[in-house]
Image (cartoon, rainbow, N blue to C red; front, side, top):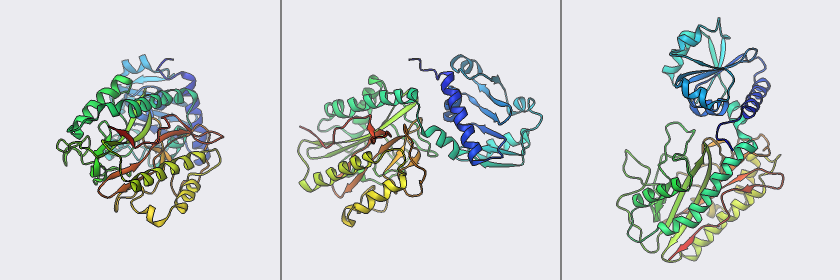
Length: 397
């Protein structure tokens, strides 16, 4: 299968986006896309440039760097070169007075440069409409996510235990793990939609380092190298017998991700009560997966699970201390963190072939973050896991 996005895929995506825009904004006339991830989605390439979508006149991809590469790898029908927004503006007598933009992405300076040449008056957000277009995956997209999931399963369940050795640092594990991931087929980077967010290799920790405060919007923690690089892993924290090892990584193939968290008990088992808390997280994951059917809503799933949990268990559930997140999982695809989210406020029914990372986790004082995460495809019979079924807390002796 060619890694280039087929024209039929591009046409399907554009048709779906136009349909959603017309349903949400009946009077829309012009949409402009700048972010490289969304350019990849709609055109099959990631140039520095922009995609101008006109309701009545089709769409044009304007590529600045590199036009030559873009025409080689993209099946998109209408690609033109530009050196600046001025070049593109000469083609248009006048855009509509109101333009729809990625307000979660476009910085103010870029917006001002663009408006200087295109002279529109107002703008609105199309972030949600793009997110909902991307949320339902095609068979072509799912094939790459399943490849990522298969690599994920092998690395997390079979290969990581062989990397763990007494006295290694978290940074040692991160470096060796990255080599293994790339060798097995990982694309080398995991992308996030959250502004200014980066994770190097994985969010990982030995013992209660997996509870350490972080700016990342997720339940796990990570001490990292320093204040300047709060990712990767500590150079001083060494693995010792009795440690809980926590590894939460994104895996990518041809742009598409899976997400998986696996835990390990190094040298000896953890206390029974810790194992019981972990097993309840696994049970929650399986209950959520059963509800990942078309027609159910993310909000219903979230509230159903949370209402079933005791106040005692909810303490430090989905985050340690005051850093609890208000979701049980999230959409995933060209970025690890996509919409919809398994949380309150997401009331639109699930659709077949949406994909979710489900991640119930609980912080245990003095021990670390237990729990699990796997990636599931929405089907009529519930979530189909593409990252493996190992329940975690793998004993490494």
